[in-house]
Image 1 (tube, rainbow, N blue to C red):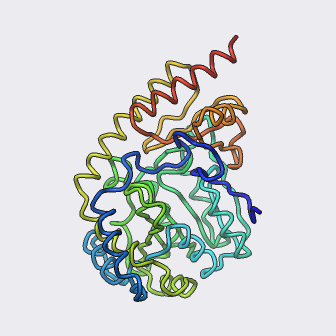
Image 2: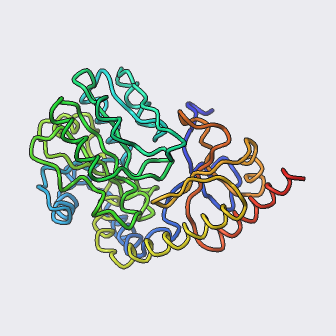
Image 3: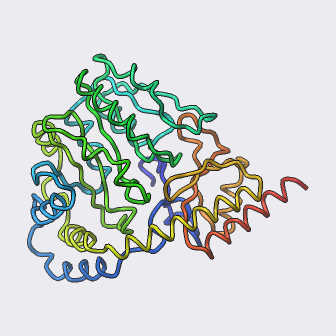
Length: 352
């Protein structure tokens, strides 16, 4: 029995999948150092995990240049999205569309009215200054994804600062999801972290999931320099929400600098390879700044590719997109070649 419909990528358990392009996880997998840390942590499972994630928060704080008390860890970024919605209980929230569907689900679960802010396909679904007048005292929260999922577009740094300033003026809460930012080569230029001031009504969300191939461990965190907001969010978390192996994995991952550099080089090269392949096939796509691409095909392409063991993400359930929109992760060269060959076959069949 399926209790609720699963509307995300990575559903490899109910499908016969040879290559998964539907989940935007590092194609290099999990760093060896992280796997070893998990193995060692598995030997000390009897004690409860540290409920405060003290060592991990300390290491993150030193890395990010913020206070330890400004960091809250979670059982994946998803838990923190729900903690934000349920604890702060906004009545009206502005959410660009298309964007990650779980924002609206969490807000609606908290009894919040979601106000979609449509992004325009002809402009590449980029967020522009037209969002600023919409941030009023009548809007309790704004949720942004940077880079946006599933479009792969970053919000310009100058606009982000303007949005933060507008939130300061109106008291609107800002949840900025930067979970994919570490998978770009411009993280330092696009993050809002340096602009945060004590007391700001802003929460920045991040995760270990994608970059370090840790989706199965569930580890995320948020940065907020407003103690009142963070304390409220923490009260809506279960005790011992981050397991001992997950905390150990996070500590180990933060030392994997060579792995990160190798990943970014691979993703940059392979994204260009996929874009060139789609362009050669005359398949419309949106140039991306991260490790996935949004393209348009036929409504049955997802099913036809799955029959070949290739899983891609249908985006028909995203507001503003259609059943012809698909998201694909950037993977290794042999896998990317296989996908492009399969797409070429579908394209040729359509044209016959």
